[in-house]
Amino acid sequence: MNSILLRDENDIQTIRDFLSRLPGGCTVVDFEEQVQLASVRHTTRLWLGKQGLLAFAWVDDYNNLVFDLDPQQASPKLEMEIIAWGAAIMRKRNAGAGEPSTLDASCQAANLERIALLERHGFHRDEIRSLHYARSLEEPIPEVPLPPGFELRAAHGEQEVEALVALHRAAFGTDNMTVEERLAIMRAPEYVPDLDLLVTASNGELCALCICGFVELGNPAVGYTDPIGVHAAYQGRGLGKAVVSDGLRLLRQRGAKRAELGTSSENLPMQRLAESLGFAVVSESVWFSKEVA
Image (cartoon, rainbow, N blue to C red; front, top):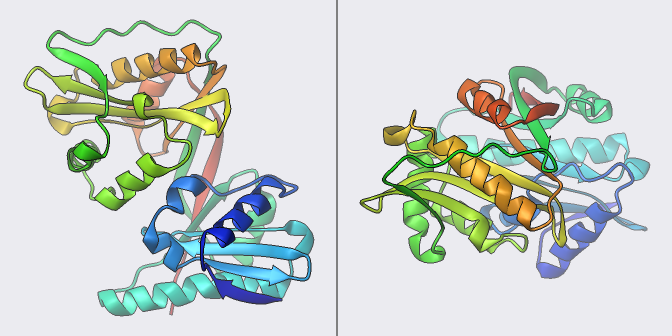
């Protein structure tokens, strides 16, 4: 077994092929979006064996260790090297920042093998969880009209990326969206420009967002409405519910039978919105953190 840093598009295609044939299914979320980011590519390492790719890992911009490995080729040495790679990146980041941050990771709550792996290597479970919602699009979709003075439209493309980033930050009250990250979403192969939905006020200001699309490239059976956000100045007017309901109808028109979205266990307003539109929790992910000395 040997390991290499990600080199080029051929290595990215190797990872794609690897993910498509994993016996237990891929555990990496938003691979195509993430791999658009230079920061992710710079922290991606591949482990190779005689039969080809054994595993890969990166640490994203939010200090999350993201990895997948072939369970049939797993070994204590491979596990240790994956965790060590993540820890090494965090040591470098912490040294540059001058303050310690943990190395984090998440997985489906039902993935007992991954949970055991993380706990073997010193990760501790956090209280926060990610909730995964779904609803059938063969059931009626509530009609939720926009209030007077507001309109629905699709994003105008990369020319307004800075405004889209500003809207995201104003909606979520964080800096957890950058121009590079928004461009990565818009340049991913599965991105559908006219399903990148916005609500605008009469003065043209961006008020709410809902990015819709399809979970699998080329397969319209399962769609998603995620992320969803409303500018802090416009919250409480029903804009979020209205833009999501329009998104659900557009997904159904394109052949989707099911829609999914996700939110944090701490985001009670989004949970209420999802449930008001017929979504129900179908699974959850648990989060872990590890101190890096």
